[in-house]
Image (tube, rainbow, N blue to C red; front, side):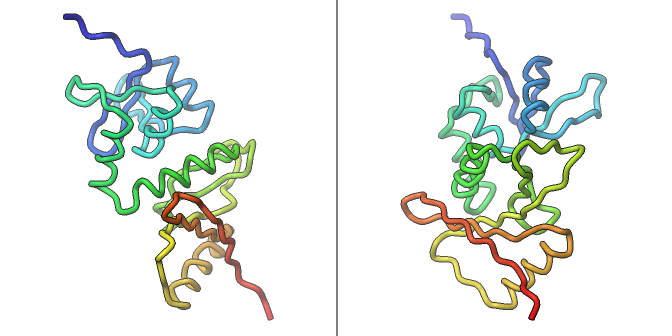
Length: 180
C-alpha cells in the first residue's frame, strides 16, 4: 500500500519542526512563523512546537517523525512531556495570533512570548509586550512580580500576564511600574 504524499510536510527533530518546502517556507516567512536556518546548502525554517501545533490546527502544516504523520494530540503529548504548561501556552499563542498579533518566543527575555503589534514585521519592528503564561492557581511574591516588570521595562517592553483558568479562558493583565 502506498503512503499518501504529505501536502505541507514538516519534520519533527527534537523540539523543533523543520520545513524545507519552498512554497511553505515562503508562506511561513510572510506570516511571521519560525526562524530561518541557513546551516545547510538549502535553507530551512525551524518552527517551535507551539507554532507547529497552531499550523496543524489550521491545516497549514503536517508533521512527521520517523515516517509517521503526527496528529494534533500527538504533538500536544510531546510538548507536555518537554515543557510545563505547554497546552496553556499554546492556548495563549493561538489567542494572540487570532487577534492578528505577531508572536515569537520570549525565552531570552525571561518570558514565554514577545508580542509585536498588529501589522509589524520582525526585521523592522520591535516587540511591544512580554507575555508570561500562568495557571489560575499560580501565586508569586511582590519581589518576583517586580523583577518581571523591571526586566520588561529594561528592554522597553510592557509586562503582560496571561492567566489561563480551568475552562481554558484567558485573562490578560498588564502590569507596569508607575512613578510616584
